Image (cartoon, rainbow over all chains, first blue to last red; front, side, top):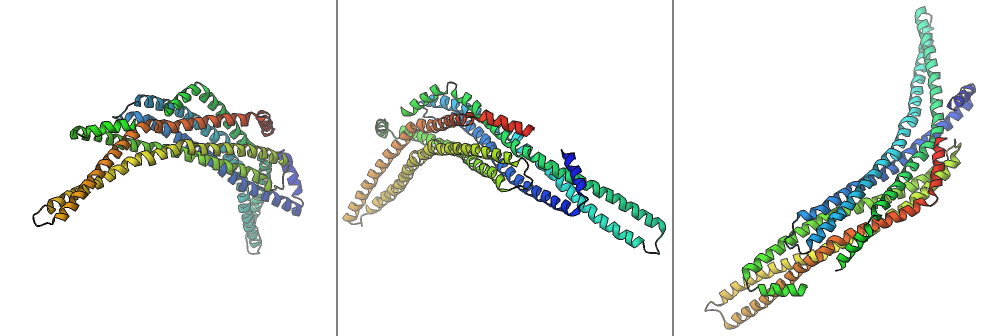
Length: 235
Length: 235
């Protein structure tokens, strides 16, 4: 499809005005897309950051619960029970920590990474060819000036020859870069749909898997434990 | 129980050495408990902070997904589908955001708040009576010096009377403060168990409720939606 569209663009190169207006629409669109992608990426990285922090925080909490035992309180009447209960909680929090860390990793892999790749690969390709075209364009202008200068009567024939050969080379390069640019802009349009939907698909699937594992974790024998703890705090 | 223990302490006031050694054990214990409570509270506040941030982050993500539509991309071939899909994701993320915020609130109410209350009420009571005792003790020393001074032959009788009355008042206050201090230290021992277990009970119950609501949220018609999105990204 990319090739077909490029051919269409190549044909329309004949008509400079319509090519330019189509090009400007493409450019405006990809500029907006870059802007939107950056903002979406920021939001997703914030969610990922919060999830990572949750992993670290639960890890710290789990360790802190185990610290109680090491305090060796002298007046430890009934402390045995508190110690073993806190150990159970530490184990649960530790398991939750694994789930949180796993979720954070999945968010990184299936939400943040694909969008970064889209930005680095597809959006950057467009910018790259745009810069290349602008470089080639100024070189072409320079060479055109050289050709004009070399046509002055006092110049040697071989200088004229070199100049026109260079001009032809640059024009070929320019044409090639234009094609690559159109192709990249075009690919961007086709990649856009996947780029926008894939990260959210990854996020939602990771979240579902997190809930399922969470339910599995807390439902096994947790009710009895919690009601016994609840009794302990009401004694 | 507090009263019984206080009586025991009152009796043991007769024997100063054993009272002091018991007191120092109580004090050391409550010092360690204060230290441990502060660290545990820090860990819990970190977990709460991460959960709050997750609420804010998902809210931002949900809004960012809705922004796509407003961009009005010119080359919007197939954009209708992307827009409606992102709207569905925004709705899901918005619902997840409610769950995250609810969990953060529950963590604040049933995990962080009870431990803060324990620190403010039970631990602070001990420190308060300790400071009061130290103030009364220096006042007693001062008054004892005054009595000694007033016993010098040249002093008037009414000055002597005032001094001894003040001394008696301070001693009564001192005794009262000691009792209140022992009672507070004692209450601390009895409150400790609840204070250590209640927040973790709250945390775990909130987490379970979060998983249950999460499963309910994602399981309703989510599978069909996700597989259709998955198809869209593979087209």
